[in-house]
Image (cartoon, rainbow, N blue to C red; front, side, top):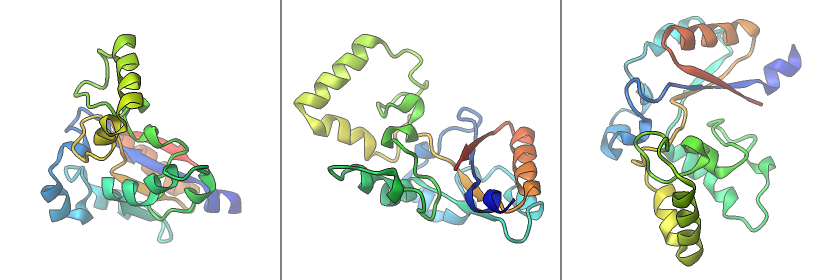
Length: 178
């Protein structure tokens, strides 16, 4: 159980499409109420009340992702070791996992109409002009951005049960990150 308490982390990702993506909110709206999380329509207090006193449910944002995760990927030899203990718990082993289908091209429908030709053109564009690609990854309003609303650091099994039940009740997704 001690291993569980130290290593298990769960990201609560709300299903995109219920009320939209966190990135579609304006920067002003995101900064106006950072404590509420981007899915302010959910009863986060109800989840918090079911967690153990040692568990931690924190708000996350695109700013956390860019400040804590992106700098490592600009290093000549990036390593996941620098990402493991970032305070938001949002860092993933590959930079582009923060976007739907792991591709930051703006897409309102989750890249469902993505073709191989388009992907090939994107890669060629990246080779010709890196800023072509950078403009997608630095845009907090990119509809392809798919980051968690909250991150839960559970301590006991009942914290995980509460999170899974909350996600099920609100048709959200729970992703495990260790």
